[in-house]
Image (cartoon, rainbow, N blue to C red):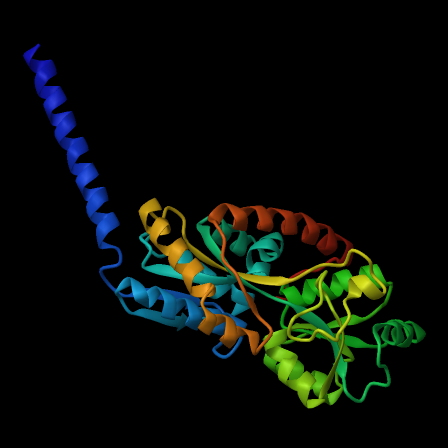
Length: 325
């Protein structure tokens, strides 16, 4: 009986200590600076989200540092974040293609995917079918006819193999029945330069990279890829309402963390993200570049990823997409 009593005493003591530790953790986070890893170069859509999230998380009482670790279509930054301690002090801003496309193409990224868990969706970036201002077409119907006259002659631009821009174009090719070859760039910036110059005939690109050029007349937007018209370009029809019923794809961004992040940290971060992305200041800042801010639960991110992975797996198989060496 005495042995059993001592055992119970020490068990209770240990449990009490763990509970106190958990309570202390819940109350103390964050007690040091937080790092947000942006896996693409500064100045792009990822950076916009990172700066907005950083400003919001600052309100938790600690500085938030944005660290750009670009390369390999986002794999380098994601891999770095996945190796950090799962304590909430290192998080990752990820584009949808990183976790619904790249794991299908890269064993390395598939390994990273297993070590990362989602926190919240941050927003949606509508994409547009864009062509050089000098191209002699003014509607999506005219573009399709133009491309079909010379199948295989023209190249389209994308921000890199396995990116949203890449798979969106391949889906467009399959649905529209046109034949173009991909020209891969290291990011949207250099691709847009070549698109304006007419070195590639078209692209499907996100608002932050092309809106300014559309409004200045250097590019023409012929259609949006989302089911509803974009608030940034309400006069531009959608592919779904013109020639491709049911066409509805959008790039979204989300906040991720190394797998195993404590639930109490998630419970602090998720409401703060919701507050940040719903703020008038963030909405106004992102609306300028056509970004629609949002927030969600971790479960909603998982559900969206699963649905898109199934779609892109079929597109990849049909198009025989592979990552460049």
